[in-house]
Image (cartoon, rainbow, N blue to C red; front, side, top):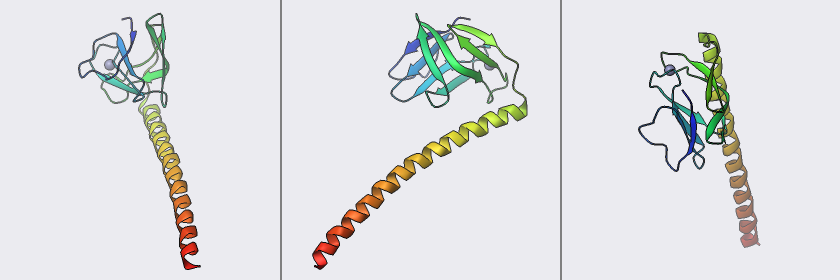
Length: 135
Ligand SMILES: [Zn+2]
């Protein structure tokens, strides 16, 4: 199967075989599993994967490991071509999932700390205003 790149404003509900849909605005890509099992693979771009178009043929890095479907497929897609890799063992799959979760958590922490800083700044500004009123 050859995979083509398609930029979309919205990932369709029904995906076609051989098309990697990329929604840049929402940082998502989706494709049907290359093994033909029909499993919908969703990728976070660029958080977990990079997706590029080479004359319409898609390249996805790093490899796609289908941990949440029965096929347990593992492959690269390079210029539209699927390069099969050995399936992850259950332990490797668990490690990948853990890493992905850890990435999400760290992203949330970064976001929270930014809000915290903004909030602290607001509190400081309010305190300054309050102290002016006390004078
Ligand atoms: Zn599959």
